[in-house]
Amino acid sequence: MTAHATSCDWTTEQTAPKPSRIKSLFAALMHEIEVRRALRHVSALDDAMLHDIGLTPGNIEDAVRCGRH
View 1: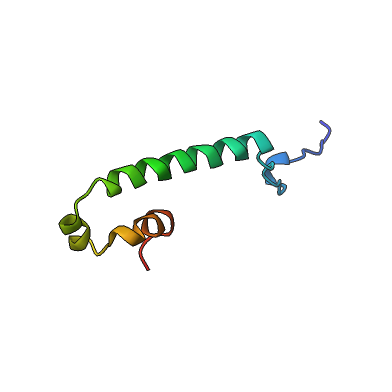
View 2: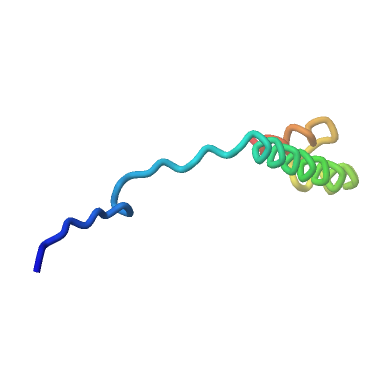
């Protein structure tokens, strides 16, 4: 019997491939669509409901895009 070396490819560190530019563009587009959908939903709330959640009509977009600070 001869001893043969086995290479463990699964143990070597492999970096994850960078996402393609098309995937990144598509992901950014989908994110923007989700943000705009959320903006429509929150903008449809009346002033009393906005006040209840701590928003004013002037800071809806900032709250949707960045979260509340």
